[in-house]
Amino acid sequence: MKVLIVGEGKHELGGALETLVRRLMDRDIQCDVEPVKRNDIHAHHGRGQGYFKKALRWVLEARRRNYDAVVLLIDEDGKAERVRELTQAQEDVSVTAMPRALGVAIRTFDAWMLADESTLGNVLGLKVGQQRKPESLTDPKAVFRKLLDCSVQQLDQAALYRDIMVQVDLALLSIRCPRGFAPFAGRVKRLSSTAADG
Image (tube, rainbow, N blue to C red):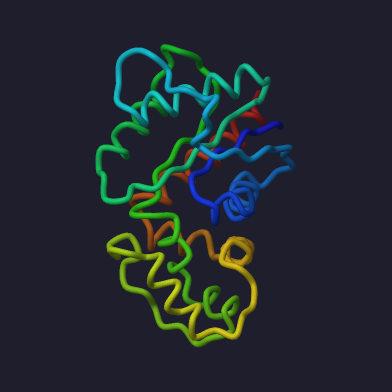
Protein backbone atom coordinates (compact mmCIF):
# COMPACT_ATOMS: atom_id res chain seq x y z
CA MET A 1 0.00 0.00 0.00
CA LYS A 2 1.39 3.40 -1.02
CA VAL A 3 0.52 6.25 1.38
CA LEU A 4 1.22 9.98 1.20
CA ILE A 5 1.75 11.41 4.71
CA VAL A 6 1.37 15.17 5.08
CA GLY A 7 2.31 16.98 8.29
CA GLU A 8 2.83 20.44 9.65
CA GLY A 9 5.86 20.82 11.90
CA LYS A 10 9.49 19.76 11.75
CA HIS A 11 9.05 17.47 14.75
CA GLU A 12 6.21 15.57 13.06
CA LEU A 13 8.07 15.44 9.74
CA GLY A 14 11.27 14.24 11.43
CA GLY A 15 9.96 10.67 11.59
CA ALA A 16 7.40 10.82 14.41
CA LEU A 17 4.28 11.06 12.23
CA GLU A 18 5.49 8.36 9.83
CA THR A 19 6.29 6.06 12.77
CA LEU A 20 2.85 6.66 14.25
CA VAL A 21 1.05 5.98 10.96
CA ARG A 22 3.02 2.76 10.41
CA ARG A 23 2.11 1.54 13.90
CA LEU A 24 -1.57 2.44 13.51
CA MET A 25 -1.86 0.79 10.11
CA ASP A 26 -0.05 -2.32 11.36
CA ARG A 27 0.87 -3.44 7.85
CA ASP A 28 3.64 -2.96 5.36
CA ILE A 29 3.30 0.40 3.64
CA GLN A 30 5.39 2.43 1.26
CA CYS A 31 5.16 6.10 2.10
CA ASP A 32 6.43 9.57 1.37
CA VAL A 33 6.25 12.45 3.84
CA GLU A 34 5.51 16.02 2.74
CA PRO A 35 5.05 19.35 4.55
CA VAL A 36 1.46 20.65 4.40
CA LYS A 37 2.70 24.07 3.30
CA ARG A 38 4.27 23.86 -0.14
CA ASN A 39 4.34 26.67 -2.68
CA ASP A 40 3.32 24.39 -5.53
CA ILE A 41 0.29 22.90 -3.68
CA HIS A 42 -2.40 25.55 -3.74
CA ALA A 43 -5.76 25.31 -1.96
CA HIS A 44 -8.52 23.73 -4.02
CA HIS A 45 -10.92 26.34 -5.42
CA GLY A 46 -14.58 26.20 -4.49
CA ARG A 47 -16.67 26.20 -1.34
CA GLY A 48 -15.18 25.85 2.13
CA GLN A 49 -12.61 27.48 4.36
CA GLY A 50 -8.82 27.43 4.15
CA TYR A 51 -7.90 24.10 5.73
CA PHE A 52 -10.89 22.37 4.12
CA LYS A 53 -9.59 23.48 0.73
CA LYS A 54 -5.95 22.72 1.59
CA ALA A 55 -6.86 19.19 2.71
CA LEU A 56 -8.84 18.51 -0.46
CA ARG A 57 -5.95 19.81 -2.54
CA TRP A 58 -3.67 17.25 -0.88
CA VAL A 59 -6.26 14.53 -1.51
CA LEU A 60 -6.19 15.46 -5.20
CA GLU A 61 -2.39 15.54 -5.18
CA ALA A 62 -2.26 12.04 -3.69
CA ARG A 63 -4.62 10.78 -6.39
CA ARG A 64 -2.58 12.54 -9.12
CA ARG A 65 0.58 10.83 -7.86
CA ASN A 66 -1.11 7.40 -7.73
CA TYR A 67 -1.09 6.88 -3.97
CA ASP A 68 -3.56 4.43 -2.46
CA ALA A 69 -4.34 6.77 0.46
CA VAL A 70 -3.42 10.08 2.07
CA VAL A 71 -2.86 10.88 5.75
CA LEU A 72 -2.82 14.55 6.76
CA LEU A 73 -2.35 15.98 10.26
CA ILE A 74 -2.35 19.61 11.38
CA ASP A 75 -2.34 21.34 14.78
CA GLU A 76 -5.47 22.94 16.16
CA ASP A 77 -3.42 25.77 17.75
CA GLY A 78 -6.50 27.04 19.62
CA LYS A 79 -8.47 27.48 16.38
CA ALA A 80 -11.54 25.24 16.79
CA GLU A 81 -12.65 25.79 13.19
CA ARG A 82 -9.75 23.61 12.00
CA VAL A 83 -11.44 20.54 13.51
CA ARG A 84 -14.67 21.34 11.68
CA GLU A 85 -12.88 22.02 8.39
CA LEU A 86 -10.85 18.79 8.48
CA THR A 87 -13.93 16.77 9.49
CA GLN A 88 -15.77 18.19 6.47
CA ALA A 89 -12.81 17.40 4.20
CA GLN A 90 -12.67 13.87 5.64
CA GLU A 91 -16.31 13.28 4.70
CA ASP A 92 -16.35 15.17 1.38
CA VAL A 93 -16.43 12.99 -1.74
CA SER A 94 -17.45 15.69 -4.21
CA VAL A 95 -13.87 16.02 -5.49
CA THR A 96 -12.66 12.43 -5.16
CA ALA A 97 -13.37 9.30 -3.17
CA MET A 98 -9.63 8.88 -2.46
CA PRO A 99 -9.14 7.04 0.87
CA ARG A 100 -7.97 9.50 3.51
CA ALA A 101 -7.27 9.97 7.20
CA LEU A 102 -7.35 13.66 8.06
CA GLY A 103 -6.75 14.80 11.61
CA VAL A 104 -6.19 17.70 13.95
CA ALA A 105 -3.94 17.42 17.02
CA ILE A 106 -5.47 19.25 19.99
CA ARG A 107 -3.85 21.74 20.70
CA THR A 108 -0.70 20.55 19.05
CA PHE A 109 1.10 17.33 18.12
CA ASP A 110 3.35 17.99 21.13
CA ALA A 111 0.47 17.14 23.49
CA TRP A 112 0.56 13.56 22.20
CA MET A 113 4.17 13.28 23.43
CA LEU A 114 2.99 13.95 26.99
CA ALA A 115 0.15 11.40 27.17
CA ASP A 116 2.18 8.34 28.23
CA GLU A 117 4.41 9.36 31.14
CA SER A 118 6.07 5.93 31.30
CA THR A 119 7.27 6.13 27.69
CA LEU A 120 8.15 9.82 28.08
CA GLY A 121 10.26 8.99 31.14
CA ASN A 122 12.00 6.10 29.34
CA VAL A 123 12.90 8.25 26.35
CA LEU A 124 14.04 11.25 28.37
CA GLY A 125 15.74 9.19 31.10
CA LEU A 126 13.69 10.91 33.80
CA LYS A 127 10.99 10.14 36.30
CA VAL A 128 7.98 11.90 34.79
CA GLY A 129 4.67 12.38 36.54
CA GLN A 130 1.34 12.10 34.75
CA GLN A 131 0.62 15.21 32.68
CA ARG A 132 -2.95 16.30 33.38
CA LYS A 133 -5.14 16.34 30.29
CA PRO A 134 -2.50 16.94 27.60
CA GLU A 135 -5.10 18.36 25.16
CA SER A 136 -6.02 21.11 27.63
CA LEU A 137 -2.46 22.41 28.02
CA THR A 138 -2.01 25.92 26.65
CA ASP A 139 1.53 25.26 25.42
CA PRO A 140 2.41 21.55 25.36
CA LYS A 141 5.58 22.30 23.41
CA ALA A 142 6.86 24.42 26.34
CA VAL A 143 5.96 21.64 28.80
CA PHE A 144 7.98 19.16 26.73
CA ARG A 145 10.92 21.58 26.48
CA LYS A 146 10.90 22.03 30.26
CA LEU A 147 11.10 18.26 30.72
CA LEU A 148 13.82 18.06 28.07
CA ASP A 149 15.86 20.68 29.94
CA CYS A 150 15.96 18.27 32.92
CA SER A 151 17.03 15.36 30.73
CA VAL A 152 20.55 14.24 29.87
CA GLN A 153 19.42 13.22 26.37
CA GLN A 154 21.48 14.71 23.55
CA LEU A 155 19.05 13.89 20.70
CA ASP A 156 17.19 16.68 18.95
CA GLN A 157 13.49 17.10 19.63
CA ALA A 158 12.39 15.52 16.33
CA ALA A 159 14.40 12.36 17.12
CA LEU A 160 12.95 12.24 20.64
CA TYR A 161 9.41 12.56 19.26
CA ARG A 162 10.11 9.70 16.86
CA ASP A 163 11.45 7.58 19.73
CA ILE A 164 8.33 8.33 21.79
CA MET A 165 6.10 7.27 18.89
CA VAL A 166 8.00 3.98 18.63
CA GLN A 167 7.15 3.12 22.25
CA VAL A 168 3.98 5.02 23.16
CA ASP A 169 0.99 3.03 24.43
CA LEU A 170 -1.52 3.75 21.64
CA ALA A 171 -4.54 2.76 23.74
CA LEU A 172 -3.44 5.14 26.51
CA LEU A 173 -2.81 7.88 23.95
CA SER A 174 -6.41 7.48 22.72
CA ILE A 175 -7.73 7.76 26.27
CA ARG A 176 -5.58 10.76 27.23
CA CYS A 177 -6.10 12.63 23.91
CA PRO A 178 -9.72 11.74 23.00
CA ARG A 179 -10.54 14.83 20.92
CA GLY A 180 -7.57 14.80 18.55
CA PHE A 181 -5.69 11.52 18.62
CA ALA A 182 -8.59 9.08 19.03
CA PRO A 183 -10.51 10.14 15.89
CA PHE A 184 -7.29 10.43 13.87
CA ALA A 185 -6.16 6.96 14.96
CA GLY A 186 -9.54 5.49 14.03
CA ARG A 187 -9.34 7.00 10.55
CA VAL A 188 -5.81 5.71 9.96
CA LYS A 189 -6.75 2.20 11.12
CA ARG A 190 -9.77 2.20 8.80
CA LEU A 191 -7.44 2.98 5.87
CA SER A 192 -5.57 -0.22 6.57
CA SER A 193 -8.70 -2.36 6.84
CA THR A 194 -10.24 -0.78 3.72
CA ALA A 195 -7.14 -1.60 1.69
CA ALA A 196 -7.11 -5.15 3.08
CA ASP A 197 -10.75 -5.60 1.99
CA GLY A 198 -10.12 -4.16 -1.47
